[in-house]
Each structure stands twice: as C-alpha cells, then as structure tokens.
Amino acid sequence: MADIGKEIKKHRSIRGPIRWLFVIFSAVGIGSAIFYNFYFSIFGWTFSYTGYKFFLLAIFIPLVFIAFPVRQGSSMNNIPWYDFVFAAISFISSMFLFIHSIDIQVMGWEYRAPLVAQILALFLLALTLESARRTAGLLFCLVCIFFACYPLFAPYMPAFLNGKGLPFWRMINYHGMGPESIIGIPLTVVGTLLIG
Image 1 (cartoon, rainbow, N blue to C red):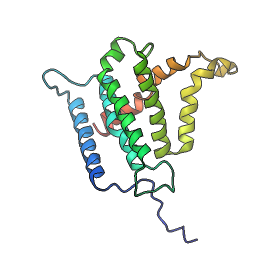
Image 2: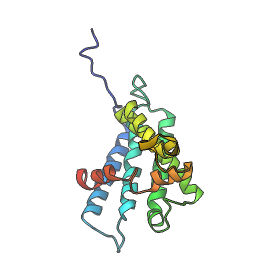
Image 3: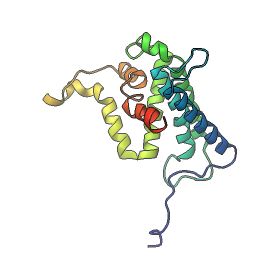
Image 4: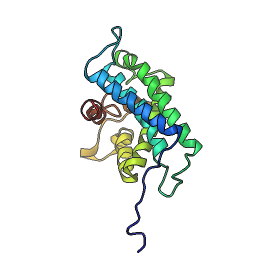
C-alpha cells in the first residue's frame, strides 16, 4: 500500500554536461524545423524532403537512449555504456542517410542500396524500434515489429491476409530508406506541424 502514492519515473534526470547535450540537440532540432518549414536556404542549399526527416532522427533518437533506461528499475542516475553506444550508432546511421538523402531519392536506394547503407538502415530500424519500446512500451514495439516484418511471411498467410512478400534486405531498405515507414507520415507530422 505504500507504493500507491509513490511516483514512478520513466526517464532519467539529466545533469551535468549531458544536460547541455540535450539543450544543444533540442535547439538544433528546433532550428532545423524553422529552417525547413520557412523554406530558408544557405547559399542555395536547403534540406531535401527526406533529408530533413533523417536529420530529425539523427538529432532526437540518440536522446531517447540517454534519457530512458533500458527497463524500469534500472539505474536512474548512471547512464550505462551501451546507451551511449546506441545513441552514437543511431546518430551515425541517421546522419549517413541524411547525407545521402538525395541518392536515396534519385538512385532508388529504397529498392537497391549499397551494402553500407543497408547495414546502417538495419541499425536505424532496430534502434528506432528499441526507442519506441523504451518510450511507448513493449506492446507497442511488438505490434510495430509484427507489421514491419509482415512482408517476410505475407505470402504464407491465408486468403485475405495473403500478400506479396519481400526478401529480408529489400524489407530493410523499404523501412530504413523508404518514404512510408520510419520517415513516413508520423515523422512528417512531427517535423512539419508539431515542432515546425
């Protein structure tokens, strides 16, 4: 009965230099939203449609691994080394896709991408699902995994659930670099309406 009034913290209290990382990344994220949504350019350069969304992922997904522990009951004071590794990998993979966003659009990387891009898209997909689990819960993450992997077993489903299947790497390309998965409608809403 003593636990009824006790507040359950879901995220860490960020202090010290890491707090400044949050402030800087948040300011860069808001600044990029202003830059993109008001159609600014620097010497003729501006964000591409998909590049902006990959940039937002690079700015905000790493912060999830710093702020949210791997599970409830984990230390709220210390950030374990693997959360820093996850943050770095999510930043690097998102920035790589941001840098190559024009190639993704023009050269059709959603269908056939270089091996490095495929591996980084796999990392980005896995870390996006992990960030969803940490913030929204296991059930949400399992539903996302089921629908993300559906193309792998769609041909084997009965009648009305039957669909065209995709090989594993084609599915990863679609989710990691396609405009209708990770960087689809939800991220567009966040990037253009909520913070834009």
